[in-house]
Length: 158
Image 1: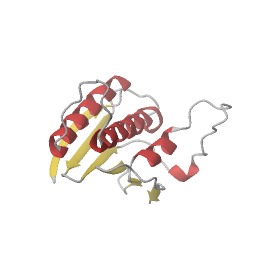
Image 2 (image 1 turned 120 degrees about the vertical axis):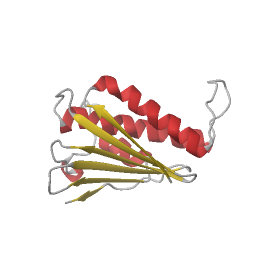
Image 3 (image 1 turned 90 degrees about the horizontal axis):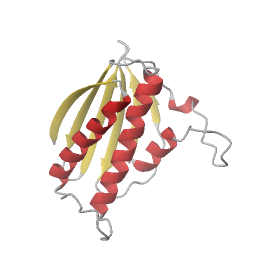
């Protein structure tokens, strides 16, 4: 499994760079060429990659908005492991602790803005885990197989 590590800062403008890094490495590891944006149907690999990138977007933006309360220039370390069958992603940051079980389910009736991030992440990846170690370092671990996701519940590790 190839492993790459990148450091980013807690700014929403960094989300495109995070996604681009992950997309490039996944395409390399999964042997997926960039689609030309034509009318061809998406392959299973393209679908899995699109799902992963949306989960990455939600995860990173949650870290910036909630883990750091939009405080700029705080560190986010992204560890990416890619094999031919799956991707493992670890987001590490010394921010606020997070318990996904404390997040209310999304309101699908339009009565509330936001609140869909955790729900989406759970639907888009095969596994999601949240952890805070004894030093205060928080981690979000995403695992995505090349085949389409089967929704999983998130688990909080204390």
